[in-house]
Image (cartoon, each protein chain N blue to C red):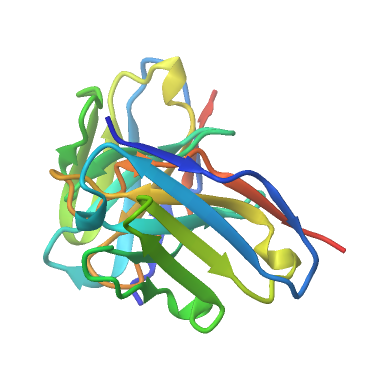
Length: 108
Length: 120
């Protein structure tokens, strides 16, 4: 089973700042089957990035994903008030499809 | 426009079973991967298992093997998740999620979630 470790656990930033979230996998995934989701309280998760770096339909270009192998990054430039949420990475290259423990992006 | 509509909240006694449905509309039901993800209070997302109706064979996370049954009914475009012998640790919001034509295996469509509370 691939374990995903996200860092930091929480991040306090202000609107207009840049956020950098990390996701490290315990095993190499050469297929880059890595996704990022945004979760807000009381809502269903929202797919932001798939295949490590491809934005899902309708996702603003201030969200970008990068990385390969075991190290992946979600970057959010020019934070908007609606971006403060919890972010999860997920690998779907091999079963079981595991999630990281999440990074909470908090308003400073 | 793909929509996933889940069944309503459930309250279950410890040791009983719970079955949650996920009715899909829009798109080809049998060709996509339907998955179940849960989120316990204050905790993160946890993938439980999934099924591609065309193939019919479900895939389960080892943690749930033996206790979880995922099925799909093509005649009603509905996926099901049944969890047996529930305990208080199974109290969570359960989501169904489906991949997309351009996003194989990534969960682009989500149901609204079903709260399952296990309590005596």
